[in-house]
Structures are given as C-alpha cells and as structure tokens.
Image (tube, rainbow, N blue to C red; front, side):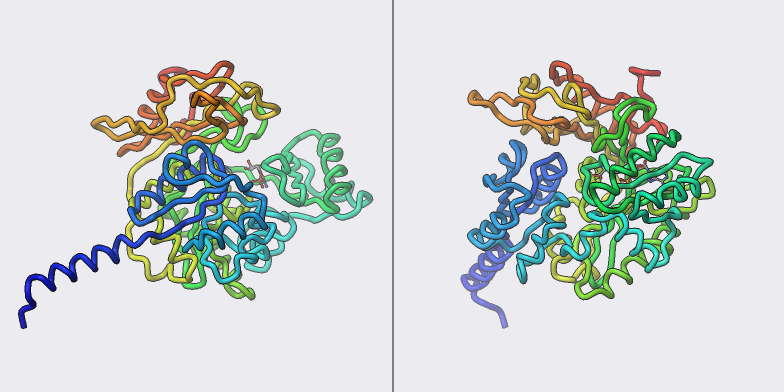
Length: 448
Ligand code: AMP
Ligand code: GLY
C-alpha cells in the first residue's frame, strides 16, 4: 500500500531526527592525545563533546570543564550532572584510581582499576603476562634490599633493565650498563615503592600496538612507532614521546599474526576471565627481535601519546561507534573498516624538556583551526601543553607543547606535510626531532 506523501515526509524527518540525536560524551584529559580523541569523536555529527579539563584544542570542539583529570569525585559529579552517554578516559591516573568503578553503570571507554593495575604496577603486569603465557623478558621481583645483589648478578652481561613499581610518568625505567647506577636506582625503588622489577634486556625494534578490547572480542589498530628519546638517532633521556608514525613497517603481516596469536589473544582471554571484562584500549608495547618474534615490554591501559595522534584519524567518522561499542561489550558487532592512510606526528617541546620546561612563551604562527590541505594529504596541529593568554595568544604551558600531524598515502608524504607545517611555527628555545620515521625509511633533507 502506498503511503500518503505527507506521512512519508514525516517518517523521513523522524528518522533524520533519530539519527542526529545528540550523544553527550565526557572526555577526560588535557594532552595532545585528548585533542586527537576530540577530533576523532567530533567527526561524528551526533557528538556533543565535554572535556575535563581539556586544552585550547578541545575547547574549539566542545565545552571544557575546570575539573582535573585526577579528580575522580569531580569527574563523577560532572558525568552525572551532564548525564553523559559515554565517558572516554584519556590518561591512566584516573583509571588506576577507580574512576570507571565509581561511574558504575554509565558506559565507559576505559578499564576498571583491577585491570588498570597492568599499567599501575609492573610486578602485577609481569604476573598477568605469566598467567596468560605471553612472551616477555625473564624477570625477578625484588622486595628486599638484601636480595638485590643476586638479582643483578643474574642479569649481568647485558644492560640492566630496572623497573620501578607504580605509575612514574615515563620515568620509572632505567636501562643501563653501569652496575652502580642500576643498584642505586633499584635501591631507591625498593625504598619508595616496596618492590622493583629487574628483567633481561631485550634486543630488537620497538612498536606500539593499540588494541580495542571488550568481553565480545578485540580489534588491533595498525601498529605505530613512538620515538621515546629526546634526541635524534635515539640519543639522550627518555621522554613521554617525541613523535610517532603509523603504520610501522617493522610489524609485517607475519609479525602481526604472531602478536595476535601469542600475545593479544591470550591476554584477551585472561583479562575477560576476570570478574569484570577489560573494556577500553590495551596498549601493547612490543620489542620485535631479529627473527620477527614479538615480546611484551609493557602494557598501558590507555592510548599512547603521541601514538593516538597517528592512529585515531584511521577510524574515519566512526570513533563514537567504536568507543560506544567497547563500553557496551559490542565490539564484535562493529563492521566499520579502518582506513589505510599513513600518518606521522612531530612533537614540539619546550626548552629544557624533559628535565624541566621553560613555559609562558608565545607560539607564533598557530592558527588552531587550520588544516593544511594539499594534493597529497593534510596536516594539522594537536595541541597539548599550551594555553591562551588574556589576549588569546597561544602560550606554552608544558613540556610537550603541541604536535604537528601529517596524513597522506605514504609515510614520506605525511612527514613532508608535518615538517612543512611545523616550519611555519615558532617558539623560542623549543626543540623537536628532525628524524621522525627514519627507521621506516623516511628521508629528512634537513639532516641528510
Ligand atoms: P617501559 O616503561 O616498560 O615501556 O620502559 C621504557 C623503555 O625502556 C621502553 O620503551 C624500552 O625502550 C626500554 N625497555 C624496557 N624494558 C626493556 C627490556 N626488557 N629490554 C630492552 N629495553 C627495555
Ligand atoms: N608514547 C608512550 C606512552 O604513551 O606511554
């Protein structure tokens, strides 16, 4: 039977209205990672974005709220007040402090505290790896200063790898060939945290695998590679990450298959056999040896920063769908494909970073809304440690100030776009690495 035209029109309008129903999302965090998450989420027209506390980048995409990312009670109150449909947690601290547990039935992208301990405690992570049977460096957990000498003897002959228990913001690991330094670091770790992990040195190349996970299944996003050392050629102290690219060619299809069958599959089974399933992203820090065999270096329970900046754009317009599904154990039902572009991001850091950071300086050339389009792709700025002064000038306020991300059909194209955009920015005393992507064959005319 044909319907009268008027009622068909009404149905279409209702349908459209239904499709455009707003989804209030509370995003927790304030870094470049969160700006990238905000960009990904708001590509879906339904998203009404709220960020706590956010940064000037997230402010352009929604509403920032003055609630700190570590303020679990404040975040809980905000989520209730806004009655959000979804909470997406960027950093690890509120996860370890039980934010998701506190939110109860409210859908969350991020694991409960019992799983967040995979990042919060190195010894807990090692025990979980052992229980799941995943390959990782041999280790001992030392709880008494008196047992330290034997443990160091056991791993002599290669650099010592000493891991402090507990969250340390990227500063809790020492890799050194100097026994005295190893001993001093381990002793202070035992004194402050009560235990320290000493493990075998793994040779090879690192990669980061971000895995969406819930009770229904898991989905590996294309592998990326971070650049953790401050200096070109991987020299100097560790940082939060000075740049990243995706995909990482070191993760060949053969390596990927091994990562899934030996690590991700068993970890998924292990985590989902616990009282609560793991819901969120599991960051698998990998070392891949010369034979292409992968080992777990670390687990994190959130997206990497800056790995997130080079991975989220591959979700296209579907980040909300993916994250909502994970929060509701529906991941296995999501049929969206992941885009195949190449991305590369370069972090601009303040003078003195990582040991200290000179802040309060104006960043010239920053037009936050701008996306540079060219025939080969696009580039944009992910804001991090910066704020606006009274005259709305962007000024530096942290160690990692921003990163410039390029997206193209090749890593070289992405790098060219990112570096070109970066060259139009100026921040007194700032530094960045000119060799992001070198291991993947990216050429850098500035340093070659
Ligand atoms: P983590 O915080 O556990 O990721 O360690 C920080 C960095 O130390 C890693 O990104 C690696 O570069 C290095 N590292 C950690 N564990 C090992 C290991 N067993 N062998 C070699 N390098 C390691
Ligand atoms: N980029 C390393 C991390 O987020 O832990």
